[in-house]
Length: 345
Image (cartoon, rainbow, N blue to C red; front, side):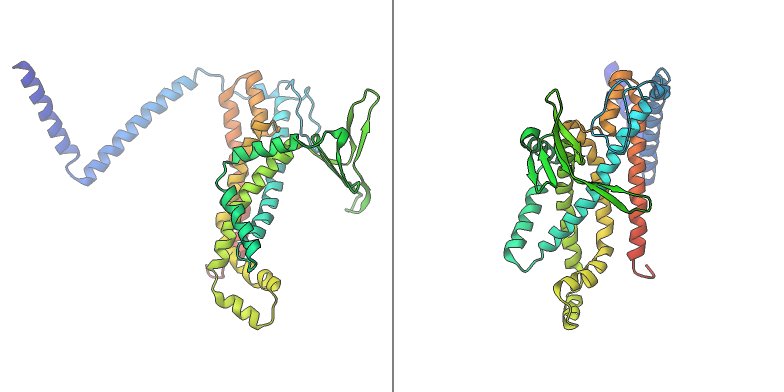
């Protein structure tokens, strides 16, 4: 009997509460929002209490790094430098990878996108096959493939020599190095050279050397991102009225002139917003370079965390860095978007 009374009381209270808080849609929404805010507050208090027991300072970044980094370019980092110097070297490596990747993926994407609309059957089918295949293969798998490919190149003792201009081996690709004088005047072009030291160590001693790690991650990012940009370009061109092309043909313009002067300038208004998203994706995807040992900011941060701990402060720094790069890309692309927008929009 007591159990029946208790159950009845609980059911009565449930229906009373339900009737009061959930009678109308407005009350139900307010009730659910209140429950959400209470839970969010409790979780925030819990995290604050836990975080107050941790060392969240950034003083550890001023200590000596104690580790070397490969893939340096225009930097002079050494293990005796501070950890912040090591991190900034990783940031610079990421930035140069992103800049080169954006430029090359844009060029390749535009070419493939235009090729998909070509009147040549073979060109059109090759471009279509490229887009459909590359877009459906995970990026990580593609990066590992290109990393394996670069490692399978001939050793530096058996390097591939292309007209004494480009030297290719599994140690990297060497290109001519251009020396500039003040004012931007070219004073010399140094061709790449492979030499053997007295202890039989073979290496590049001159020229501009692209490391295998940089080349592998660059190929993966460019080829993958370009497949999406190609579809954006194709869709933007097809979205333009056919009368534009017909009018240009009537004026006697050839196909290249129509594309350069008529089609692409108008298509940019459609292309830029979605392409901006692809640039942001490329920036974030660059963190996958860690799997092949390229010294980007994510790899350097991981080394710092393994040696010094302080995972939460380092992750805060990583997040802020990626946010800053993405924000800068968005600002630049929004500027270009306003430049090509129709007057009055």
